[in-house]
Length: 431
Image 1 (cartoon, one colour):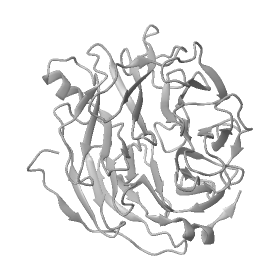
Image 2 (cartoon, one colour; image 1 turned 120 degrees about the vertical axis):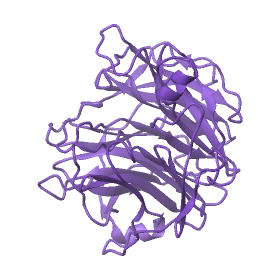
Image 3 (cartoon, one colour; image 1 turned 90 degrees about the vertical axis):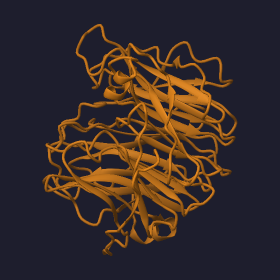
Image 4 (cartoon, one colour; image 1 turned 30 degrees about the vertical axis):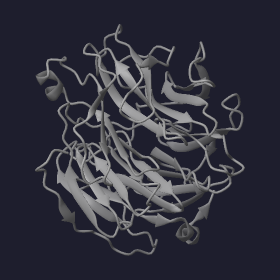
């Protein structure tokens, strides 16, 4: 964020409800694309410090969600969505996003969003540097970055590279890319992770949803979806990767869901590993949504591997409801407890388009899940206003912070809730 950008104290919209989960409205704007694709991260060194972002809007609390400050980030490379936030143990926040076409064009580096941009904050999210360019390729487009910080503070970044986006050209290809850094300042040359070809339509036959995971002992993994299947690649030494992608799970409908009220919806995979000092340390966890039960019944599924991806458990439907649509899941692991948390949109309580936000969690490594509705009131989506392609969630030391977008009367708004794990048990229904 450049000097001169105005920051102000954001008044909270918090009300109590029977669910005992307080919802916090961070922002509201009129129009499409204004507040979609939110992300959130808790500072591991100070869990009272939480940062959320939606497009180029950033929201910061340093008192556990009681008060928030809003600002806007800017970069010489532009800010064009697909954002994701992570934070390290020293309290540095990392905001990865796509570059903006007009900004990049002005730099004469091409006519596309031809790089991933990393902006960093060392003061808890209040101010940000101008941004660092990662994966520059002036002839292609780089989209949807996802990052992880391992137990030593090293960063791994994956994203999708498109020859052109979006495109229905049969010769246009999409590939999964990866880069790594020890300190966020210098990044390795990007490498192609995927061997399975994908097109550039942005739908089921496109390489989408790539996410990295690094185990406590340094083994590296990447998972993504293409051609109605979830694939995995891995390296045990950081250098030698598999010669062929492993197809680990059927995925019926990657990004082409027909969910009434949305022009676009997806069930892209979310992939993580447990680095906690518990009995599930080293397990790999995978969450996604698909329509294997039919086009009128989308569900959120969970699977795990206890042997570094060689074998996976039978998919478990983690939602309480077995009808209508549950979709767009986001997962996190509290690395101090090993507990798993998954937030998603859920229409199972209704016969129309009303939509709740539900939190599912597991304290036994994914054997069982409990559910609680965390949105105070349902919303009805509007095809004229996009929710984007993801929501997000973060957890640390028993504090859980989901963030989501809702649509009301044609306005998009971003909401969060700061929840203590101890409070969830009184709200739960067991799955």
